Image (tube, rainbow, N blue to C red):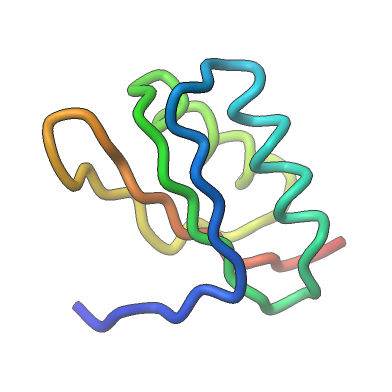
Length: 81
């Protein structure tokens, strides 16, 4: 699978819902349409909730991958304001 170049990266390890979504939402809002956000997190709940919320807000999930026993990487492309 080809790597997607992120325009912005955030690390929200140690945070729990709803703070994880708030931080991800603020980060995606700071981008231009078409740019890509990479999110590093360690909350299984957030690994399910953030993708659903992003898609509910019209953004495109490109990746949701568990990278080790505790961490996930999510990659989101901003599709609309």
